[in-house]
Image 1: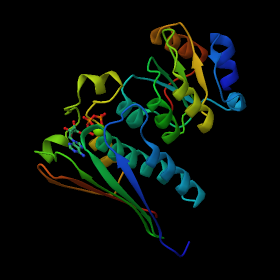
Image 2: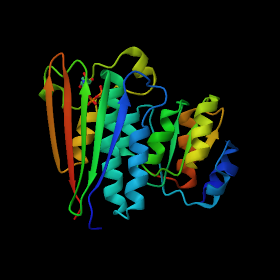
Image 3: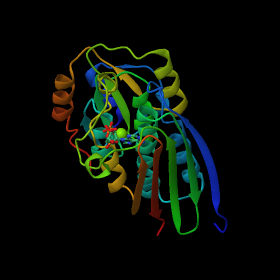
Length: 114
Length: 141
Ligand SMILES: Nc1ncnc2c1ncn2[C@@H]1O[C@H](COP(=O)(O)OP(=O)(O)OP(=O)(O)O)[C@@H](O)[C@H]1O
Ligand SMILES: [Mg+2]
């Protein structure tokens, strides 16, 4: 499924990396522990988290993730947005909880990546 | 690729807010060298976890990154407190991360196990009160 479809269906606010909207999202992962994401997320996953600091960008880059959805209305600082823009990582915001986002993604057919 | 590629990075301890620079750069270099994407990811993960441990627990370190036609190696030598019990530190879930680090999403106690999983060879040498040397090697083929 294209990232664009997810952004539209969930009403997410995309902060940067619009060029990546046409890219395929092949799975999903949710966690607020960085090493956990490193260990278990898969390439092409959309990552759902309530963390909003700059370290999430490095992790997304290292794992070739398809984008990050920041939940619970958290706003990333300018440092995080700058880094995401440089590295072309799509950052998306929502006031929904991680639970709600994951539920909706699952219903749309986004499952754990492989 | 006939030549050996070598680059060293300095890692500064303490700033956990925006770390991982060396590993992001290493990943970009490997991609440019045309290394297989799966291996690139494995090296990047191992390097990132070693880099973050310096940022979290040590004063500073030198990371030596070497690519030969058959192997990729990362050697991180830090000045820091050292690891009292390496066997214990290697266990999944073991962590001495501070509450501040945990708030940032660190401290799952999975860094060293992640390095182990994503490398073909791992050696950890540590001297209490002096520092730790982590040697990571991956076979290219
Ligand atoms: N370079 C180092 N210097 C001193 N102690 C270290 C170093 N690297 C690891 N340790 C010790 O080993 C423990 C386990 O490290 P590991 O990377 O597996 O987990 P963590 O860093 O605590 O959490 P995570 O990596 O999941 O965020 C650390 O909590 C720390 O006590
Ligand atoms: Mg660690």
